[in-house]
Length: 198
Image (cartoon, rainbow, N blue to C red; front, side, top):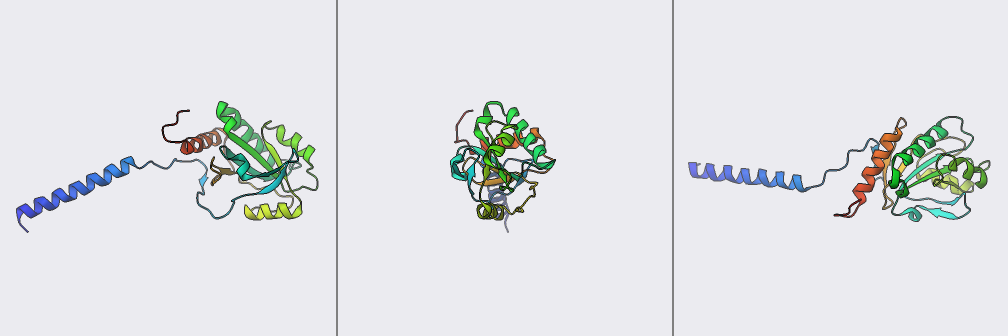
C-alpha cells in the first residue's frame, strides 16, 4: 500500500468516525428513569372497568396524561395505603403538572370494595385519583392482563403509562415520592411535541 493509499484510508476512517459521532450527538438519549423501563412489553395494554363514579373506564379515556395504575384493596393494612400515599405526595410535588397525572386504584376485592367505599378511600390520598372495580370476571381478566394476583392480594408494582397510553414503567417498591415525580416529569417531557415549551 502506498503512502497516498494509507493517507486516503485514514482520511476515510476519520470521516466515518466523525459522522458516527455526529449522528450519535443528534440522536436523543433515552431518559434515565428511576423506575424499571418496560417499554414494548406485550402485556398491560388495557382494562375495561367501572369507576367509583359508576362510569365505564378504559385506558384510552386518559390519553394525554401519565397514568399510574395500582392494584389492591381498601382493607389492606400496610402496602396499599403506603403506596397510594407515595403517589399522592408525588402528585403534590408535581405542582401544575399534577393535572397531567391520573392515579387509578383497581380493587382486587370488589365484593367488599363498593363504589362509595372506593371513592372515600382513594380520594383520601388525592381527590383526582379514581377507584376502579369490576365483577369477578372483569377483575380476573384485568389482573391476568397485568400479571398480578387476583383475590385479596395487593400488587407491589405501580404500572405507569405515558400520555399516549403505552405501558412504560414499573415503579420500584421502595420508590420515593420524589423519584416518582421525577419519572413522571421525564415521561411528560418525553411525550411533548418538538419545540413545545412547558
